Length: 459
Figure (tube, rainbow, N blue to C red):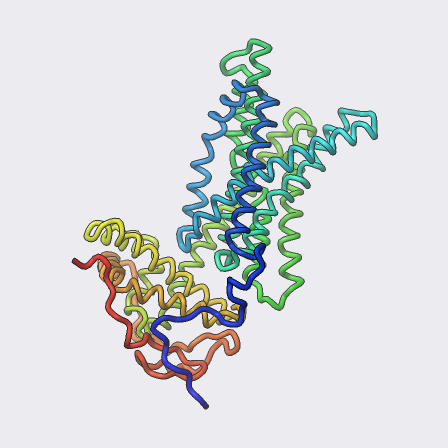
């Protein structure tokens, strides 16, 4: 059997695509980014004008000041959940902007149009409002928010690899949507109080703030997270499972619409309908989804500890790194140590090293389960190259973290032989080669000898 050449010093990207200079103008990245930014900016301006028209300038400012309270807490919670393999900030910024601008604009326009049409068709405005709140609004709003999750799933596929990614993208999108909606409701409540002269805790503004910001800031994120879970499970499915990859997100979206409808219709269930729905559905669902998110995060850490030893055997990682990278406390200690001794740039390099190693573990896990894409080998080499370039900065920090957490971490001795994972051959012969040596198909290769020592922080 012919052998492949040693691992190149600078891995090249996938071949076969047309060079960028031959691409059509609408396929260029700056055109797509420009169109997206323009769309979101225009949506933001229109939604700003609509909300200000309904609340007035003073009501808008009051609503804005009150609606911002839960946003940092929710964003921090979703970012904490995403700490194992943190996605790029640009995805979160896009998701929040889509929810606050595009999705909110779609919801306001579509809900208003549908409610007016139903009122005109049935000549019953009260029935139209009830139907709009319990049927139209959940369908329109959840579909508008799900569009952001779909876009990230389609066009940022490398950043969308599992349930946690779906939860984070969906939750941040819904946080942006709830932020704009809260400005509208709180601003309108303030205007009502201005007309009636109510002040203090008895005011409509105080009641609205208590219900929407204190009691249920997680309501919209909770609904949309169900859609995100559907997309996350679909991301874990093999590419050939087309029906599964379509039905799972659709099922999550339908569940989100159903829970949203029950929440909006709680006021129609009697005097204590709101509290009944809150206690019977919202609190248990919030607890269940919180448990699922934390359990998924712990499973990700176990995946890191089980998949990375293969690369330690081949020489890409040190013996203790797979288990340091599988502990959030050890990872934090490594970043702090690097920042204390070499500055913020070194801490950032260690954080990048941890992120690339995590992506590598998840990539190998998908490959072992036959769920990796056709670019598995190219992506694996890209990640290994990024690790190798940062090794001289990251390894001392990770070694310190291993010593500091030694009573907690258990290192198996010796390790079993691990095979190389590829899309075509999930588990090849367990015959890892040494650094710079040729390797045959199905073998785990070691780092190439020509890599120069690299330490940008060395004086």
